[in-house]
Image (cartoon, rainbow, N blue to C red; front, side, top):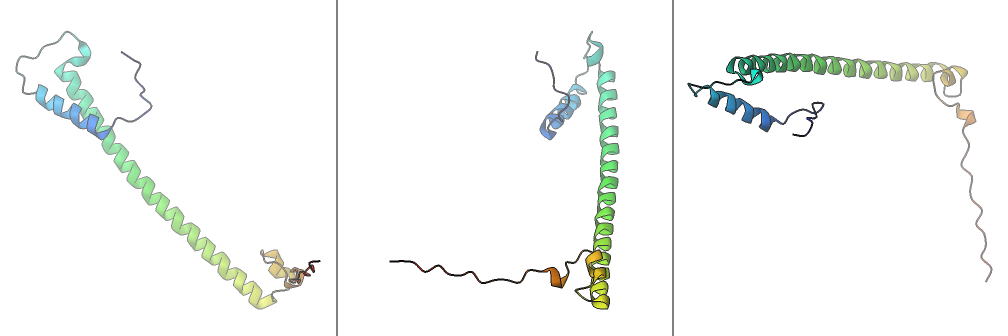
Length: 124
């Protein structure tokens, strides 16, 4: 039997098939085994542990999503506040001021004016 890659998640289909198999085993009255990891009690413990940890995972995932949403909204709130501050600085001090440059604007006088390209006459 090849080595199992336990770093990847099992598919939902595999989990469903395993659960169906466990429920099917419960209908077998005289099931006995010498393998310790295949006893009905061991299977029930493993199944309950899986359900519990899946529930914990789902709860933490919900908390993670809520925290992500809160952080995203805080980022937008901060961004909008900075944009408002920049507009106030530009309005109060002007587009060509050192203060406007300090908050991230380029001075109006530092902008290059567009220049016309001289057309090269084609010799025939």
